[in-house]
Amino acid sequence: MKDIKILFQGDSITDGNRNKDKKLRWDGNHQIGHSYAFSVCGMLALKFPDIRFSFENRGISGNTIGKILRRADRDIINIKPDILTLLCGINDGPVWGRKPTPPKDFAYRYEKLLQKCRQSLPDLKIILLEPFYFPVKPHDKYSEQWAKVLLQYRNIIKNLAEKYNAVYIPLQEKFDKASKNTDMEYWLWDGIHPSEQGHGIIAAELFAVLKNCMN
Image (tube, rainbow, N blue to C red; front, side, top):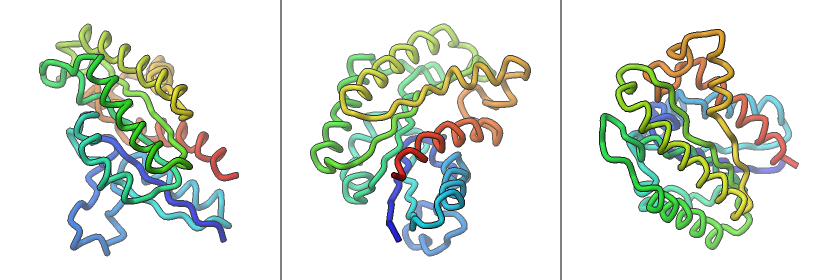
């Protein structure tokens, strides 16, 4: 039986209130959290019964790309995954009116993270998911600023994915399409965090890519 280890990395959207206490890691009910990662784990196991999967979720609520970079050794390199999925960028934006991370700094930190992963784990398969946003209360006050900065972040991530041989998953267009016949809150309840339905969109898009990594 083939063994594959998949690591989900990111912020609160990935975190899903997972159990972070090492003393309680024995509790399999809560170690992966209730984000899109939970759905993806089950879908993969059902689709590929001849593969023995191990899953790690190291997303941390509130993290920026800089914070993920600072903990890369502990929460990526030392885990030695076969596949890494990364969803971040929303906390680098103007959350609660904060000054967003300048695109140049965002690009530099994101690239340093990818460089570190490629140097330490040359066979690592990397999947990059783009950040998304809806102008929903309470995060609608800075919608123009959100739209501008996230577009820049997305372009940066897309270009880096090509440069570092990673897969890029566009998510904003999927949420935009889904909301055409439904209110935005149905998918992103506060404009940033997905509802169960919103996590379903992410899970479906990520699963479609991961299936191709099983060969």
